Amino acid sequence: MKKLFLGLAVAAGMMTFAQETKTVTPEPIKKEKQPIRFGIKAGGNSSYFSEQKLSLDNQKIGFHAGVLVNIPLSQKFSLQPEVLYNQLGARSVISSTDVTTGATNVKTKSEFKSTMNYISVPLMVQMRPTERFYVEAGPEFSYFINGKNSGDSTITTTTGGTTTTQSVSNSQDINKDNINKFNLGLGLGLGYDITQNLGINARYINSLTDMRNQKPEGTEPLNHRAFQLGLNYKF
Image (tube, rainbow, N blue to C red; front, top):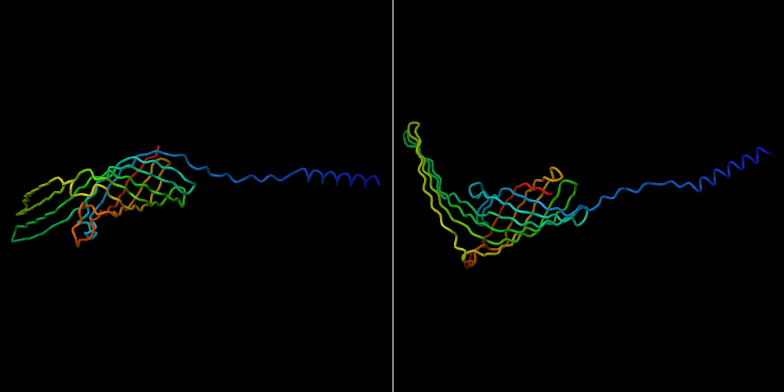
């Protein structure tokens, strides 16, 4: 009988302990939204005009440089305004010949370049499929500062192993009255954060505004097209 009471007491004690003891499951750690970060960026531009076919002969090499601020909206999305000095334009190889007569080879090349400098303000919305990789899209607002048109001709003559080169260049400032001061474009790009501070970014800019102040009747709009590749550093 004593064994029966002892068994009941032990069973009751175990049931009471089981009711009072709760299994605690730790909650998953939630990633907090990142703070606002400021930074700098710089890189190269390869640009041309919309009336040109995409080729190496019409790519004008320039650069961009400026500041940025990255504003996280959530764990996946952020807003990144930038202020950049942005060099656009185009290049056109007017003629290129290579003629050999007897022991003499003559190469001639003539090209025309337009360099147009802007202050650009991209407003990019970035989405991160992964922690380090992101895609972006958004408008870019630009203001024309100044520019130049230049022409270069080069004649290279080789005779009996001796080469001589003659170059002729001329340039003139672009008349600001002929240029539309404000330009609206659309940017699409992607980027990768190499470290917490250093990242690489590639972007394509398609201008939506005719760069001319007055568009001649019966002509297609003349727009900027540009590829950008650069580095950014966030503090």
